[in-house]
Image (cartoon, rainbow, N blue to C red):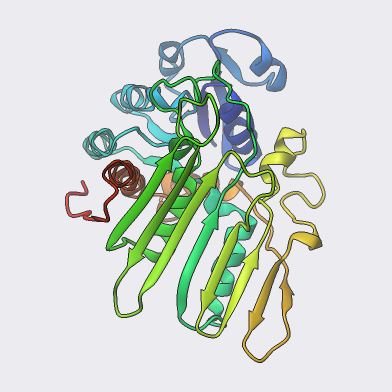
Length: 351
């Protein structure tokens, strides 16, 4: 058993980390850092509750640390854990800058410790289904890929750190890493990008909408468009793929987050399975449209991979270099939006 400590018991710590770690075979949720309150103790009575990071790191039996703190603290907390010779998984965004990401990567190499980012949306059922459709070749040569992650929250929450104007807030840091990581995973490094990062809601002080166009100009040109907004009373399609032989359109979000928030567990019947009405539609030229059953999602796949990588049984799926690339795309997106320019994407200085 690999003993795991989770730092933070807010939304990320409760829903996306402690619940998933606790359900992953081979991992033991050994400790949780919650500075105040007893919610963690009530939820996980077998885990030790620490009131500081230092107390957690004093327990040398806990070797894998999950950083689930507010975004602007990710770098400092992860650095502290790596310096204490721990393996580290960091919630998204990995860091606020590519330079911070590079510093952590170099430190992890020096200490010979595992370092990864919690890009759990690679284990969404709809994303698994998109990969299956692409791998089938039925669409022909892919021409365009649209991925949208929309929410509706028209009134800004100025008292919450994600929306109060402080570092690490805004939609690009919140949902952008998911969309960017998925696109880079599927298609690799783009040649260039153009982005519009903006504030759409009245009285908002952080970016609450963005559009990022990733342009691939190889032998087979492709444009990947990544969008998100907090003003979507009617959400756009989650995925729209157009190829030379057909199209695939998928509405609805993977259900795991809402299921975990509702108190369900990975043992709940049909956990991670979508209802038939939200299955995607595939239409191939000359054929009738067909519904494509959404594959089940399972966030435990990420932590199972981390477990296997630590045991020497598998290659790490979400490499820290992937997180560096995502951070670099976010920086370029802000620059492109500010300058209203198409910018070349260059990853040659990747650590």
